[in-house]
Image (cartoon, rainbow, N blue to C red; front, side, top):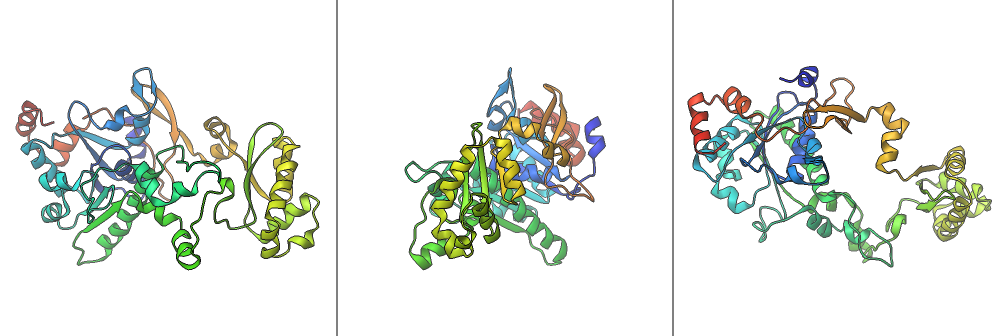
Length: 405
């Protein structure tokens, strides 16, 4: 156990929850990462020699990739060749050990390796399986490959993102994968609650397609289409279906972009007053919607004539919610992020001290923590296979001899 681990060992809401991931790249491992941040024991299974493809994703400092240092944090890395029968036998031992199994392999391969629902339920009747796939396990495309950007495109989100005269726009990170991981972690917790409270619990299979989480979050798109026959289109930063008359981003005299949101009738009236408009013309929702373009144009011109600091000060005094659009440099320099302790420093054996996101959300009674950055490939083989699964030294030696681990 490392010194860092000793400081946080046993912390978090999920201490004692045992998770094994037969999942690579982003979506499945993101779900596991969120569980690990809150104290779960998460075993990340990787092929010997090369490991998870995520180890090579993104920018590097020298020869050291940076992304995996965050994506793999708080997890145990073990190597296992699932193409080998002996490797699959060990995988089944891991399933037997676990409370939760996360898989992102194709249906056909899951069946071949006996890591599909029927097989793992037979091995461990109380296990919770999170299966993430491109199109869902019960469709005609169950065996088709899928990545997060495909899920974003199918969800409706990309169609709604961008400006009216431009193409649809994907967000600037692995949005579909990340949100799928988040919903996957939520689903695991829902099943874990039933596991803990239902004496007749007989396992659970969570079947999650990559397009479904973002699709679920755009609450109004299907009912609007169904009831009004409207197919919402791109509206830039104003949103196709907005909760109020003023939602947009505007450029200040400094060249900064400032996002302004007025989600209540009163805040829109405050903007009208700030711009010198007659307040009685913006008292009702109908009046505000009718004057939406006038408000937007007036606010754009008003902000363009002012510095960022003066703009934010005036908007705050008027009780109008606004923020400068932050870059990563802005985030690390921001006092509120510091007050929240949302940026932490973790010692990494290759890079030294590295800064990354804290374990979120904050639990004040029993918080999660980060005791390690992404581990070296197979760093935890001995701990997991011998101490946790109980394999003998002779069994480990035989697996090594056949390059299974």
